[in-house]
Structure formats: C-alpha cells, structure tokens
Amino acid sequence: MPIEHPNTVSAARDYAMLERNLLSHIRLAVLLSLSSSSLLLHARLPSSSNPASGQTPRTNAGLAIAIVEVTAALTAISAGVWEYYQGYKDMREMRGFLAASK
Image 1 (cartoon, rainbow, N blue to C red):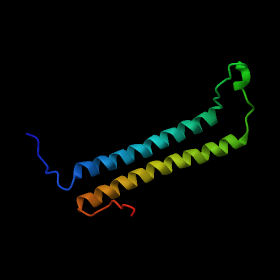
Image 2: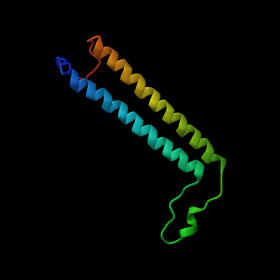
Image 3: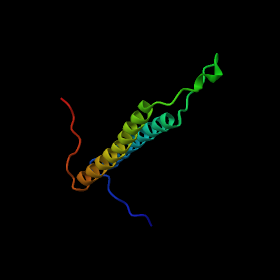
C-alpha cells in the first residue's frame, strides 16, 4: 500500500520546479560538453558547395575554448545540484525559497 503524503502549500509544484531547474542545468552542461568535444575533435559541418571545407588546420585556441567549456559544464552541473539540494532542504524545513520581484 503506497504511503500518502498531504499536498500542503503546493509542495508537488515546488518539487517539480526544483527538478525542472536541475534538468535545465544538466541540459546546458550536455550542450557545453558536446560543443567542447566538437572543438577537440575538429568536427565541422561541410558546406554543400565545397565538401572538403570541413578540414581546417589545428590551433591552440580550440583547445583553450574547449577547456573553458568543460569547466563551464562542470560548474553548471554543480550549481544545479547545489540549487536542488538547497531548495529541497528549504522545502523540508518549510521555509520559503522563492523570491518574486515586485
């Protein structure tokens, strides 16, 4: 028999908001890591007029940008997890954690 939990002060909506924010951070991190992988592997989309235009010489700028993007991806994941656990802790302690602008 499942345990029923009373939905007081729309706790389910707040929990779903925390999950959506965490998933948004993860999606951003995946996009940043794909972009950095593309830079490291020198993957380019060839144009229709010149199929060989996808080949470019290697530069160190691509490596530096890829490192920055990997760092940003790890930061996005850690910020999302921190925000999730802080919001979940506030929700457990029944403190308000949403700030609306006036």
